[in-house]
Length: 463
Picture 1 (tube, rainbow, N blue to C red):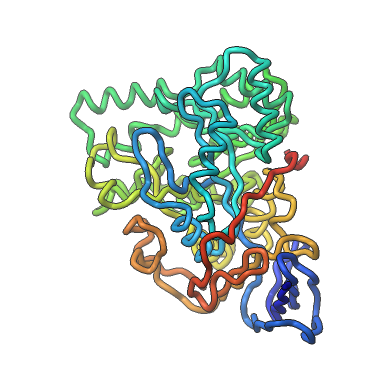
Picture 2: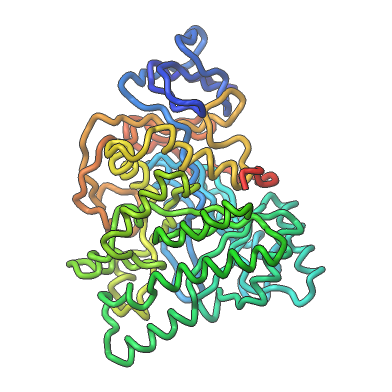
């Protein structure tokens, strides 16, 4: 039986701006958006006065239940999607990893089996390509198989030997195949030779503590790899290129310049690079900031904000990765510690505080960066906006209370947050995923199995 919910008196964040009004959810879809909608016949009415009503966030870059072959996060899809829902994220786009000997169909099937019926919010998948078939015709068939399975994006790496790294010849082949099939190519950009040389030098000097993590992976390595990836993409026929987790403004500048010359290229950043810097590595808990790329120099968050405010960054995600404190502290050397931090539950409060409340973002701009843009880029046609006929993915955010971020209050397994003790403006109050209420007055009330796989359509001409 279809249920209806009327959300009333909120500040609606719509594609064309914000306005006071109501939104009616009927079954799994938005039925109507407008002022003073009739309440008669609604099964439930929710007063959102004083609150912001946003489209559910679409995080384009997460690693739930990650297995790298070297490390594994202990979370599963029930845990990962619960923490997402509590943060106002109603769709994640995660990764299926191609392990040695697998083709993409086997890799995708294995990931879907792992997820099973555990997801509590909706999800899409990118394919992480680690080995290419020898023949281009076989590679073309692989990409056709992905499109048929509802996956329109692949991810490749310019670093991480031996398990993920692709040399330039392999990268060029992947880019050319994606251009032929019109898939989005996500690239993790770090020059592997520069990282390896810096690492060798530091290890030889006995400088393996976490304070040296950033020096092992310099900004130059990221910027050069992005420049090279953009050049190779042009040579490969101009596929849709998406540079993930840009940590310095100069990387974004490379993407901006390429786009200005007609290349189909976009930049993603993540909230940690907008809010944290390398001072974490000199602090009491350097393990809280170990990730790849590393946190950067003190001025880089401001430079990224400037690029973001100039419209040069398309999306903000989290790169969420739920390693525990025990895993982080087991091997406190930058060459051995697993890299990655939790972020799904803190994304929206941090952007509401350091973006909207700080005057850097409007609410509609925040919604574009975290919902509409990732949905368009990755072909999730029913996601990303509050509009009649689309999925009823809705977040009610109360901007009035000032709250303190504490790891003990979060719903992941990490046992820490790099934002411990930070004051943020506002809190997630209610969350709906396809019309079902998963968060009520800040408390999770969902259940495993509601989330479903969202098939990607052909990527939007946004790139």
